[in-house]
Length: 357
Image: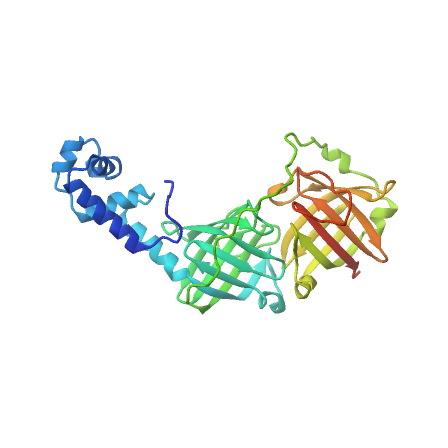
């Protein structure tokens, strides 16, 4: 069933709906009678007149409201809303494991999860993530589905499972582009993250709005160019050789938002052949094949995405060397190639790196 709950659903609101619906039915309202006929199993097939004379009670009106909102019963709706209330507050990380690897304590101590109704805000070293989430308490383990509205994963979704035990919350999440986990474990290559959180405040957190969808003044082309993946199977070149190995970021600007300097050390860039993988906090932020043309200035770079929601798409960009550091300015898939580093702008990511190995 499709659920149509209002933002931050409140049980008293639904109780009020049920009382009002029953009062309208008893007053002879046709729309109210039709709502019973459409959603209440024992009213199906009845005419409006028979619904009005059937003597339905408050429990029937509550069942109608629940089913109208996509739930199998009133108790299912109550459990859903009560659990959303129980999840509210501020949560810190006790442990985080991604693809079977435990993340450093120094990293997770800088992260927190804020929940308000069905809205969330994740503050972490790599970025802030805002959005909405839904839960399904009829499943075992219970399901959680996340929609990212603002931040690096804006427009994408992730699916997982969770369990709540008082002030302890455990979530096993399939990162963007990965499948929903079926158990609270992670293994290499699954794209699953196991989060163990502890509530630090049960107060409703301030400023958790679910984010605002980004509005870009740069329109993507109507028909992006078709790229043959074989075009990225290039032989090693001196430029690719220079980009091999491990790097750490010295600057990162995404869609005009600059990452805090104290969070940069938690990121890494690894070049292997013509493949590049960027990881922040154990999460793969970028995995691409690269194609470089250094016969022009600025140097032209193309990415073929191998991971996540942009898998199979290409990004166009430029790069340049600043001494021993290198910086890239890459447009989001479907957007035109930038021509200068002077203004990163919307739908672009500016990153600068220094070698560690």
